[in-house]
Length: 541
View 1 (cartoon, helix red, strand yellow):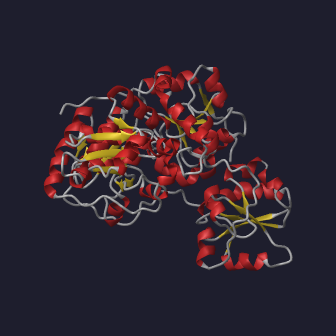
View 2 (cartoon, rainbow, N blue to C red):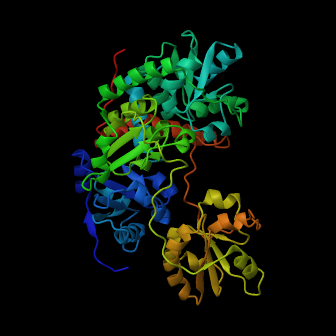
View 3 (cartoon, helix red, strand yellow):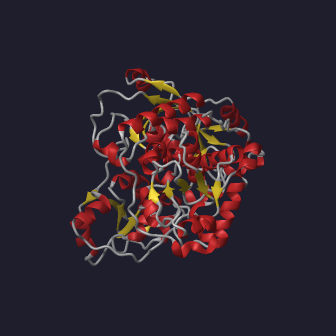
């Protein structure tokens, strides 16, 4: 890779772009745990370790302004390596942020903890401005004990809901609420309690039902399952539940669609036809994200070409993980006129230029899950799972380097494989491994291993070793019914996943309370930062 000079971006330049609402992708290429400790408000996490697997989907326009950020902006650090890799992938306007996180802090910039902070801060602003009704955990427990006429709607992803849920709760992910609740609670006297794991999705969910004009009394469970657990009720949580939303009548869909469109329009979201988006799909001077906000099963049964699937509630919760270019245009699609409009009503208030696709009569021709666009993997010497099996039995077994996310690695990996985040391969991690004449790179499918081969081979040559890639990756190893183990061999600290205080049931009470205290402080941080342009709207009935 040529050592050409890389331009530098200053705090003043990045801040001006955000204030002027120009397109800019400020990307933090550190591992997620490090990112969660401190980063600018609109710094989207896009790790160097997995750059090639995500970048084409998240940065679809090669001429977009991209500013790459790491800890200190030093030479040969994460940011410089990412900038050079982006240039090779065809991105033309890549800059290093001057001084990294330390430079942002020194310039007086506000730094935020945790992940998905823009959405969480917006949720706290909604709560501060609109004050949706809320119930404490003990109040909800009393209602449950009394068999009160109510529905508890859990707005998280289905897999999160299955991990732990409030007794009797039904899984109704956020964008589904306005469409599904009229059928789930047809009696206007039935109370509706909305919950998530913490605060954001519960607040947005409850306020969505209020905005949608649901006649039922609506409240959010204050602090979600965290609040429930802190109230000493963790032992009452259910696990592995499968209760989900149901189909709705056509009359109910039409009523919900009319209100949802009103909300989207009132918030400033536009509408566009299928023919109207054709110029945007070809436009080179503007970034547009095309997103199908329906349930994944619906998407897989038929969707529009070029649209990726991100259910609406999660899109509002994790916007920067899909729309990484701040200031870009978003086009949302559904087949009912409710979910895309409800999602757009929130994204518009979060200062996104967002349009809803008018339901087309035809064109839902693609099936199956979304497949992200990927750069072609480089050539690399590859071996079959059976060859690796035989090498492992030889007198000189190879050293296996597993590039999986730590959560996947610990669930099961090829026996003897070392966990090494890809970004650490060129930063000395190889020297921590046993010396060998052969090294084998492993990832889930084999694609990431191919991208990592050149840098690994360069490091291995200093130890007199050759580097190979496992063809088909761990998936092929498993398909061949070869053994796995869970014994860990760590060459690097597992920093690729930030442990969220609201996940699972084994977090300490202190960590959960600290997380809530942090969320309460976000509105003040937004005011100090001053770049968000959020506008919370109170809708008429």
